[in-house]
Structure formats: structure tokens, C-alpha cells
Image 1 (cartoon, rainbow, N blue to C red):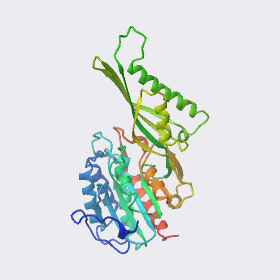
Image 2 (cartoon, rainbow, N blue to C red):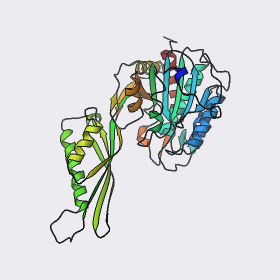
Image 3 (cartoon, rainbow, N blue to C red):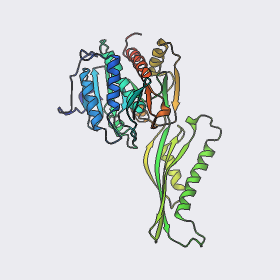
Image 4 (cartoon, rainbow, N blue to C red):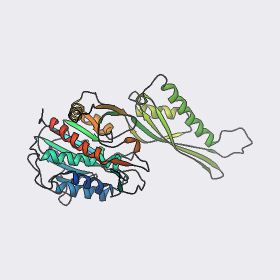
Length: 381
């Protein structure tokens, strides 16, 4: 969608001024400023659905950098730099999972919830764009700090798919500063519910709990059969039992289970949901979230730009696919433009009590993304 056709932020929410070129004359995007931005953002809790304080804080910081920054209709932190083509959208997320990880700096590492997933990548976007904007680069860069990426709703990403039509997109997720992610598995999250009349345990009958357990075991067996011969985790069906509960009121007994299934590209969420329902007519299936898998070709433009930037740093780039799911699964198919994910941080630390980011890696990622953006915007070819 063209800029003129987009819904405009309300005046009370918009901060900063639009510019006709990518240029900044405000606060200098130094290494010190980059570290302050990341630590400040991490210190503000932003669990999915409660991101408002962090969003407003980030919008204010982006405005100080000279960006036209605002909170959009769904609550995302957005900034826009420049006009015209090429247009690059840097799509990160500002929400986190629950869990209080005390914020501290020790041994060159910043600890805190969201340092890796995914405030580190989001801060990388802001600081790299600020550097590029000083260099009179043509075109437009849009940064979006999405809300509710960690929730089944993916509210922030769904809220922007009809607003932009970028030439390229980089999604902010931890890949390690020296690696580029080409794809993510899909996901299906469902709840199964079953209820049966109560009966005496001495009689031959299948309890609600047994029926639900059998349904879960059927799914495990189905995945085992489907995965036969598939060596890559990316190509396998991965079910996880998240919750299992049962109870009775003396007349009726019930059982419920919530499961998450990571999907390969060969399995569509709707098809699997239908299959789950067919196994037992007594188990009622409710879909809580569904996202197909997405994978880009290894030679798409943003992958080449980031790989080139890494080689300039003396690093042999690594390309990867991931077994999780990200907003890339939503915007990639919707926009149809070359899309990859990039960001500093060790994804193995996502959601853990030890979540932390190596600060030197964060600063290196800013250098890499700056060079990649210059390439994408027809500078330094």
C-alpha cells in the first residue's frame, strides 16, 4: 500500500518529523547510545499483551534519533525514514514471554528477559537504521516493533500486512550475529476437550482421561510414522503436550489437553486440524493458532546483502532454517517479497532463566546490518 493510502497515526501518538531522505541530524548513533538503548528497553517489562510502556519508550527514543515515530492502531512501535523506493521493512517484536530475569551487565553480557528474544534484534534495527540515515541513502526504511508475537494472535504482524508492500523485509529474530535465517516451521496450537458420563471404575469403560490420553498417543504415533526417513528437524512434525487436565462433578467427567505442533512445509495447519478431529468424534478440537511454514530461497536479495556484509567482517556467513515459528511466517507469504530473519543472540537462550546477549555480538550485528541496508538501498555496490 502506498504511503498516502495508509491509515495515519493520531497526532497525540506521532512523534518526530517525516523526511524526504534517509538523513539524521539528532543524537549520534554511537556504540554507547546503542548499549543504552538496548539496556533501557530490556529494563521495561513487556509481556505479550502488556507492551504499552515499552512501546511508548521506544517511540520516544526513535524520535530522538530523528525518526518519524508513532504507535500504530494495534499498538506497535513504528518509525519511518525517507520516502520512495526501494523500501525495506525491518520487522521485530517488542513483547516477551513471562519470567523476571534480573537485568544486569556482567562479563560483557547483558542479562534480562528479552535480551535475545527479541529486543536485541529490535535495538539492532534501530541503531543500524540510524547510521544509514546519516548517509543520504535513497528510499525508505520502516521499523516495526510488533506486539503479541509470543502470543497465538500475532496481533502486531497481522496489523501491518495490509499497510506495507516492501521490496525486501528482514525479520528481527536471534540467529547469531554471523548467521542468516531463511525459514521457520509452521505451527498449530489446539485444545482438545472430551466429556463422558461418570461410571464405576470396576466396570469396563473408557474414562475421559483415558480417551484423551489415547488421542495424544495417536498423535505421537502419527508424527513418528510421518517423520520416518526425514533427517532434518525442519522437515519433521513435532508435537508437544503443553497441558493435560481432568476432573468430574459426580455426573460427568471431563479431560482437556492443549498441544502445540511444529509443522514442516508439507503439512498445512488446516489439514492437520481436520485429521486430529477425525481420530475421535468425542474429542472436540478448538484451534487456538495456526501458521504455515515459510522458507526463502538461499539467494534472495536480503540474504545476499547480509552475507556480503558478513564477508566484509571476515566471517563466512551461515544460512539456517529454524524449528520455531516467527512473524516471518505471516509477513513473508503476505508481502511476497524477499524475506529473511537476522539478529544477534543465541536462540538456545530464548525463554530461559539465563537469557542474555553478548554485547560485542550486538554491536557487530549493528555493523553488519548497516552494511546490508546500504547494499539494499543501492549504496556501496
